[in-house]
Image (cartoon, rainbow, N blue to C red; front, side, top):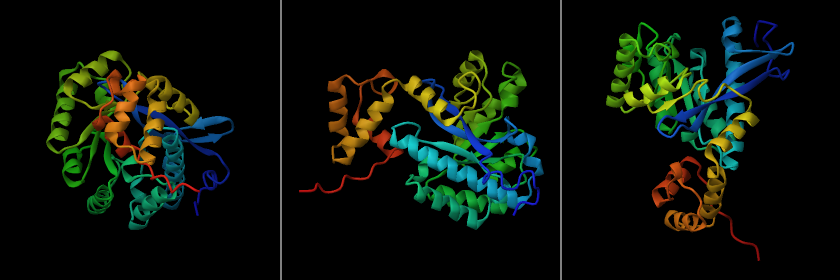
Amino acid sequence: MCRRPDISGAARRGELLLHYQPIVELRSRRPVAAEALLRWQRHERLAAPGAFWADTDASCAQEIGQFVLDTACRQLAGWLAEGLCPEVSVNVDPRELTRSWVASVYEALARHGLPPRALNIELTETSRIDPLVGAEVAAALIRRGLGVALDDAGTGFNALAAVSELPLTELKIDRSFVCRLGDPRADALVRGLVAISGELGMRTVAEGVETEQQAQILERYGVHRAQGYLFSRPVGAEQFADYWRAAHGHDAAAAKLIREMAAIGASPATIAAILNRRGTPGPNGRNWRSASVSRLLRSQPVRPAGPKRA
């Protein structure tokens, strides 16, 4: 049980909810994923974790963490069914990193019918992560196909140690560097983080992008993805879905059609040909190819259709 009465039971009382901030591919400027962000609704006001997380003890952090995990997975399953967002990131408190928590992640994925690649776990560099525990947990998740990101990269004194000790698939560049782009020191650090990520086979995501100039610099330096107010503030699930549909135009409808055709056994090449004959725009406005259909199906897998009834 949580010991602090003002936080204890917040999820059961319906006071906790998630907002979602789009994560965009810098090259196309289209959303490709979302980060789930916790909010506490009290007295008709929304509070971000910075206003209350320091008051949580370990058991409370675990309780709230399970709420975040299950809510994000349930929402993601709904989006995938509509052909929308294929990937969600969730932040994890170091106090949650146990073998039982890892098992709960797998259970949540199975409960909501999600592929492991749909979930990205974010660990914060400035948090006190036990290197041995963190490495064991991260390696287990990556073996199962999940993504593991280091959040706020570069802000702690142990930056290089964290990158070298933890198995990772993604490095998130902190907003404190992004807001100083144009300063030679900040630029050098960002380029260094991108270079390290590339050498280690990791994807890079920049946080706190607020201007077009910042986005252009980050794209020039080779950063893959970005999030920030330039693209969208964190919003509710319905607003996020509207943002996704507006950004992708007919893509959501195409994704749904692709999944329906795949379910009845159509090959990626056949599906691509049908979409092109219908004049359905492909990724980034180009024609559909079997490779682009296959990529979408890998991110949004389908179950084969059952036998027809007589």
